[in-house]
View 1: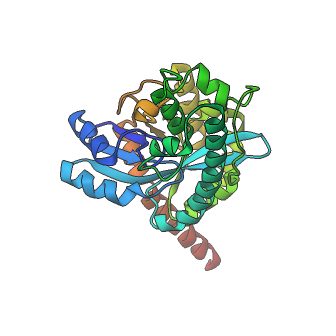
View 2 (view 1 turned 60 degrees about the vertical axis):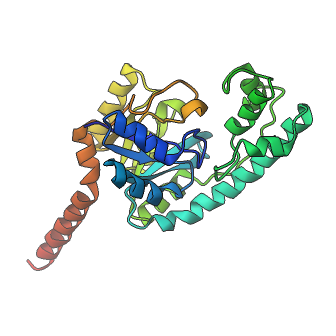
Length: 294
């Protein structure tokens, strides 16, 4: 069966709760998912417990926000199957605090521009670990100032090129720091949706930093992009993953759970990746020891 390995819940910037997502997956015939909330590990254990109840395998994941300071681009990295996910708490908390500060600034600017209160906006973030742009837009929808999350008003408020934006800067860790933290927690580092942030030219650099794979199947990747990324993975011997990047009504486009997924062949490779790496390291050590004893 195919696996949807990129899903967001109410804990970050999704509109659907964990149990509802698992029920949708079960009813859609999807037997493996990964909950990958932004810089948030809170849903991992709960997701796995609820998943067992419904017969859905929920593998641990988290989408870590990073920044390539040399290229001047955002970079998102997904950590899968971390042995010690608690070791990622520090990097997640640091980003969460920075995002919360920026969210409060944006909220106050919006509340000053429209006749709505901060409390009204905050209520729309109920259940989330942070305040996201989607929550602010949902409040403006309910107040009647727009009929969609991602539309002209969104771009006026949150596009960097807009003269009327309310953006506040958020400091993110470097790509190297994020990859190192993922590996330090015993996780697998996957470059998320490279087409979304145009990360193609930097992939070689990320591989040198220790990148383990690339998210190939994603709403931002057309057939040509899938072929291009697949060729890169084959050449660099990287893992291939895929997922819908599901956010419910908070998504940039209308995407159903499982619309983009990881084929079984590549899911098997992901699940066996760490064991394979351990075997390779053991074989290399034995070979080096044998050479010294010659």
